Length: 277
Image (cartoon, rainbow, N blue to C red):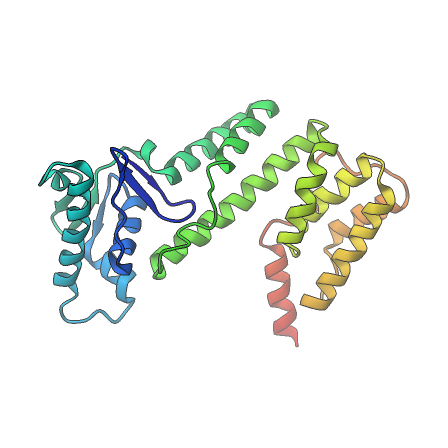
């Protein structure tokens, strides 16, 4: 049995899918998959489906949705009644008893943890490989075909932030390994996709400068500054300005490219700018 959450919802066993077609059973299956092997309470499922305003029949309706999921799972397994041993009723909730390695999110998190451990050991080649493998598990926007409630939305935000953090770490590792030219195409696309992510722009400027494209690096900085001033009313961070000055003066950027604030900094600075208006 394999369940995919890092993209459109996937759930299959024996070559047959058991993803429900109805919206709310899809939400329940996705939430149970995030907590695979652990009980998810009925109250948690109700909050996901109806936020703070569940109908009087909410608990019974949740039970009905679970029965719908089991019906599809029985059909996929080809064994009537077998789904009860997979989607198990617990006291106060339900658990999806699927090995963690069969849910892509858990595989992604395991590889991310292994990558961090390799980084602590200073094994940059292993870090790059593990993080690339983790990022390669993504098939698109998590649960892009599921109508997410408050709990699933938080999970999707967490995963997207984790992906950007790993992407930043993998690129930084590859820059430290001297793979500047190999990264230019990827960084061109990433800065277009995330135009306000200063870390990615710092990596892009560094890669351009180290491959002898000094004027392209200066033009990229100008483009970033224009975007930030127009969109946020802010100048690039002081650390990014120092990188720009280093390129202007012909000095090589620092080997470690963590020259800008963390991934949340732009959002924080934007909030402060709005509050000051």
